[in-house]
Length: 320
Image 1: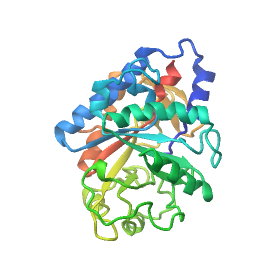
Image 2: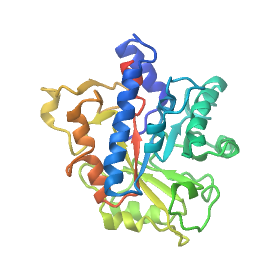
Image 3: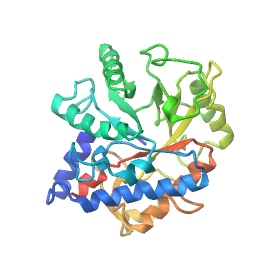
Image 4: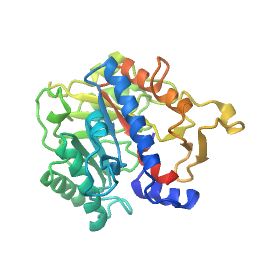
């Protein structure tokens, strides 16, 4: 359930898969189709359900270029884009992202923003760099979270209150002024401890996991308790879900897969324990993620979350 950096995925993809075609449109369109499928399924059940892909921002451009025309269907299917390492963390945590990489990402993020989508940036930094991250994101109209743990397992002490803290009732992603990204709850002894801690905050948006650990999922009643800020305002609660990799600690994992892999299951990701590449365009994998009552997306909907935060969107880079 840990978030993966852009750089580690790109590097690993080049090592394991080679680089036969630097921008193969087939793999990119497969991922667009996957995200659009999740969106159509979820929004047919709950029209207000948010779809937020993280990274893989090149998908917003038809030709994969920074000045390319927007992909209308994909941009209409999503409500926001998440982006890691925009100003800090691309090469390593607390190190400023090189200007050329930063500007490259911003050019695509602006395509999405100009189409009406919210941009949620997570930088990995500490101290004064956190303050700088908030300043730089704000100047570009991006909503940001400065994480001082790459593991996303804590509530940072800086700033003491969320950036642009408010008591507004947040009912739309466009109203969000700050967010907390905490998807690794291993430091919490129980669901009650986790809920009590997060309920005592004033973030407009919380991104969290469906499970505390194993198959111990949060219920709709528990999620509803998190939808009220400590100051009384309402907020959004969105659920993390990896769609570009399979994780062997998830409810869907079958022990037999280590000996007899299904056709869609690919190589282990050496950078992240328990994570495996998937041929994300194959129906059997997509059936695990959405489209039926036992799917991951349906479990998120049943738990009362306001949306899904989709990770490993940039898996197309591995196959390219």
